[in-house]
Image (cartoon, rainbow, N blue to C red; front, side, top):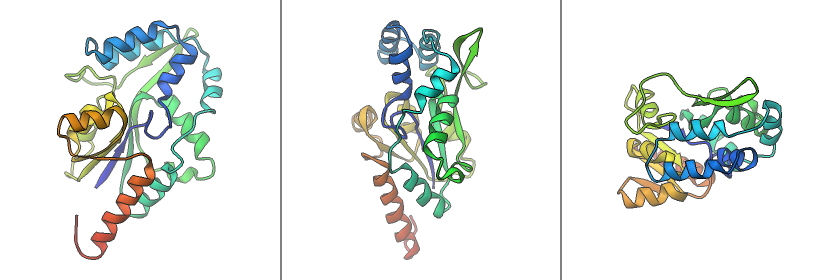
Length: 225
């Protein structure tokens, strides 16, 4: 098995991109968000337009990110996954700068835990003092995603392992359709329920850690899953 984990609202307690927009962008970002939710634009166009509305320096954003909290059980989940040699990757429609900053702040005591956790995301850069979004190379996917999570799950599973995804929002729905099993909460949970997607509801990473311990314990006793 291998895990692919969403970042905003999954690893973090709240959606960091939304918090960033609320703090540093003009109110126009909400109208852009509405277009995306209604399916009028893809998340790539949405994020590109929203980032253009952000007025913040790199250093001010870095200071803001020090206030972001993660799920307190994520560290334990990561330790347990690594103890059983279960690969974990982070796959996000957000920004690498944000992810790195938040995780470095949160994992100062356990920095080695992050060494073997690949991150797949977009980027935020500053050009002439203005923030702008940049996206992974390659052909835009059929859903016009900023960072196609479903494609990442497919391309990073050459051995056909049992792929597990964990997420919380609408940007996670195509990954949930691709994974063999999804841990879901929030809007993603409702989507999975309405679309008959194989899923397990969860509230924190403690639930997912306990699931790993149960599955691996069963396998150790002789019943492979």
